[in-house]
Image (cartoon, rainbow, N blue to C red):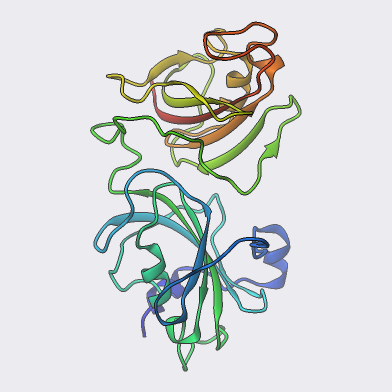
Length: 276
């Protein structure tokens, strides 16, 4: 049966596990689902960046699957190593294979799978019959986590859309687009970072490293960047992408900087490319 290998890789979620892991179905209230083939429906929780995945594209993903009434079936935690597989390779449920097409690196997609595109009429032991709900997180694809030859030539026009930010005690807000699977950044190490910055109020882009020959270089703790950047980078991993909202008092404060007005809160998308 399709997906038997995938199911054997993970332990079926239990009520005890569900209490400590991200096993709650995310809310899609107010979102309009796109209709796919054969009753498949989906909506992007995070859009991601870059080209969309196609059949045969090598991807690294994490997946969470629930029954239609919210009972967890397969739960991959953020700390779990992503699955590496080709889109359309037959290692996933048919509905998930279809839903992955068009996803971008850093995207998270909510998917409603009709029974025919889930386990069908004869589900494996422990899996329920009927429709399923899933979230696919596309961590990387075909070298998107590699710095060589994969940097966009042009910066994004607008900041990516995220479901919610996490509040840090400092007032900085963060939302991870891609968590990264490399080591955590460390004080005193040389970081190679790509970024784009926008004003929070108008989303006017004021700076970006994309289009330059190399990513921006910095060392944490040396005051090369505004305080909000130091805070936002602290627990990132190499390969990670993060959207950051920085209040004015941790940016440029009452001083205007070029096209950045005084007292402006800022948005940055930051990608830690590598660390030396």
